[in-house]
Amino acid sequence: MRTSSFGFPPFTPAVKKLVYINVAVYLLMWILGATSPGTVDKIAVYLGLVPIAVTHGYVWQLVTYSFIHSGIFHILFNMLSLWMFGSTLEQDWGSRRFYEFYFFCVVGAAIVTVVMSYTHLLGMRTDVPTVGASGGIYGLIVAFGVLYAEMRIFVYGIFPIKAKWFAIIWVGIALLGTVGGSQGVANIAHLGGALFGYIYLKALPRRGMQFAMSEGYFGLRNRYHKWKRRQAAKKFEVYMRQHDRNEYFDEHGNYRDPDKKSDGEGDRGKWVN
Image (tube, rainbow, N blue to C red; front, side, top):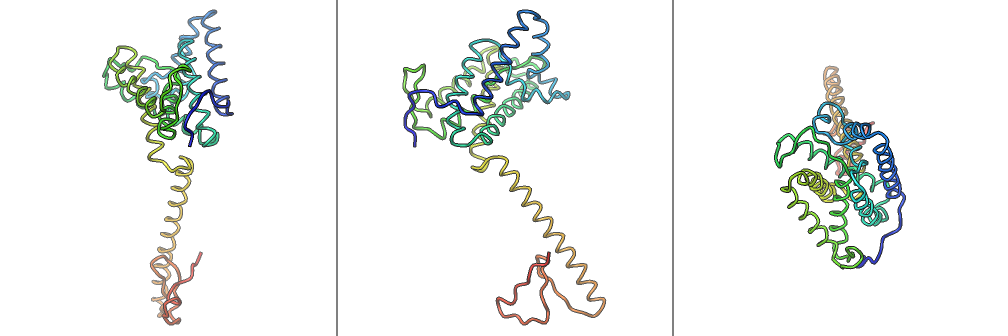
């Protein structure tokens, strides 16, 4: 078990790609902002998270909003956090599961923001865009605090604190910030990401959401085939009775030879596929 961290972890592949994409989008928006401010505003409305737009079909905003940032400190904090917490998780999970977790939190934060905007609590409006990767970042912070609770991290490279307390404090700040005007609106997304990060860790199998979905699919398929066998067995029994013959199938739709004596092991029918 890791107990301390004195620096940033390696720059892992998935984290590297996400950082590069976010930085590239930020630089592009910055250049456009200097040359065509109106274009930047249109992009922010089209790709940012606008709740009323999402409910009218702009569903891509549930993901694209996470690649747009409003300022240098906004993107700097998010990318440093992505590197610090995300790389450690990716090393343990692998890139596929890391992507799955990160975007699960991003989309979850967006859904919470859209739903809450229609309540109009905390001054939230359905026509105001939300941008930034903070929903995914807060999910990473919560996962880090749960999985590496005793690891010491150094805030600003100076103050040591255990990961579990760092996560609790950071989520607590976001919770208190929800009542703070316009920043309260942004903190709803932060809390949504933290919530979905916790749900992922506690409710889904250790091998991830894709594994859970495949298990559900194969379980459903197997139940369907068993039902089909039972239905076929019932039809076959009716046909045999009509011809004065006695053939039997067990409760799973497997053939049981009526001429074979019951002797414990021989009582079990063979599978008929």
